[in-house]
Image (cartoon, rainbow, N blue to C red):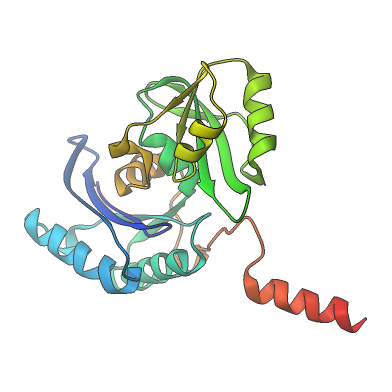
Length: 231
């Protein structure tokens, strides 16, 4: 099976092509970009597939990071995957951005904690137990303060590998002999992790694919404030 993986949840635009029978990534492209993902991701995918000697018709499944992360980036990625799946007649898989990050570092034996910046002192986070090959959720995905996360990890009392765009600051500000940080090449979002994580998820039809924000979007907040203000 040939899986196309896509991640547009943060500053990195990333795509990967994974052959499950060979257990080999045929191609991977990642760009830390200041441009919008709508400008970058589709040309990136087209060039990557061409360079791998494949065509879109060869794709059996498309896996995409569906949140949490950048509202705009997630919508662009999910909308693009829906369009491609409808056109190609293939299935898709929505993968948690936090889980994809952890799978980038699955070779670590122990606890992996994905930490993504939300707003202010809040972070999106989830922790996983890794046996070096697969992950098991230790907790539910959540949006909490960095202090709360530090307390949870300290109470856990085991070595923890941090990954995600919030990992660097957290590692510096909450120094501990129990905290380790993923190296630069596997710290941020990467479509390779999305591909591997998708193997443990169910295939769905493109009309079932949704974004998971973990918090209300601005339009919902504005409407809620308007309603509460008028009552």
